[in-house]
Image (cartoon, rainbow, N blue to C red):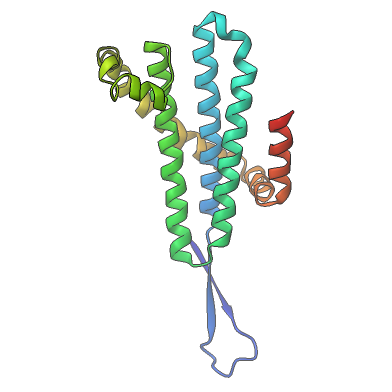
Length: 195
C-alpha cells in the first residue's frame, strides 16, 4: 500500500493534511488474479470437453458462458470496491476479492474432478439426490488423491500467473481495470451474453 499526503489549501493549521491510500497496485494484482482465474476456468473446461469426445462441439458455448459469468463477477466486485472510501475497508475488500478468486479456482478444479468421475457437475439437485454426496462417496473418495494434487497446482498457477501478468503488462491491466469501472463494460458483457 502506498500512501500520499495531501496538504489542505487555505488551512490555518500547518499540520492539516489528508492521507489518501493509493491501492492501485493491489487492485492491479487482483485484476491479474481474476484474469488468471479466467484462464484456469477456460483451460479446465476445454480439457474436460476434450476428454469427452461427444462434447467437443460445445467448447465455444461453455467458454462463452464462463466468460460472461466471470466478467459479471469482476464488474460487480470492482464496482462495489469503487464505492468504498475508507482505506481499511478497501484493504478488506481486496482481501475478500482474493478469497473469492481462490475459492472459485478451488471450486473449478473440484467440480471438474467430480464431473470426470460421475459425469455430473456439482449441483443442488445432485446434493439432494445423493444425500449430501453420500451416494457417490466411493467415486468421490477415489478422486480425492487427484484433488490433493490438482488444487495446490491450481492455486500456484493463480498466484504465479497473476504475478507474471502484473510484472509483464501493468499498463494493459490498468487499461482493463479502467474498462471494468466504466458502464460500457456492463453493456459489452450484456451484448456479448445475448448474442
